[in-house]
Length: 209
Image 1 (cartoon, rainbow, N blue to C red):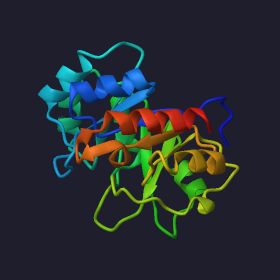
Image 2: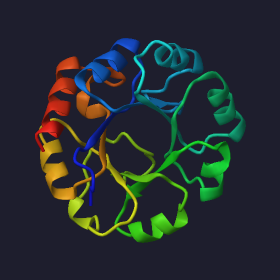
Image 3: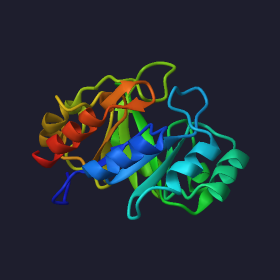
């Protein structure tokens, strides 16, 4: 499924500059900032701006939204240098494509999901991000789903999320061969605060997969 030589790594739910720098130093390809007030990893525009303005170059900065108002997304984009948008709600393809930015569409993996259909629904998405379905929770559940349900012949890049940590990420990569893996809770000391040792170990495991 992954035609590339290396599985990319996104460290999501960054709330502090020091955590962003730790992730980048350890080899992360992307960091994720959560613009969703109900999340314990939510960041304000001013904090997000401070983080992104003070990190090294060549890192993809991802802004995560959940059924956000168009005006709020535009306000974020006007003030914060976001490279990629990530939509975790019920957004339509048209809503995701409004901002002239590359975007990722998250899919919550409940038993009736057909990923081929999801790809048809979001033809302009750069990738689909597969996350665990928990009723009422749009993401960041800390629980893995059954990777066996992922088809092997999908045309669009897949980003694997949901309950990943240093103990299971190598197995996940070996089995799914995703374009990238996305972790938040699995590298935290507490919600919103990353653990440097866990980040380093997680990324090291991905490099040995």
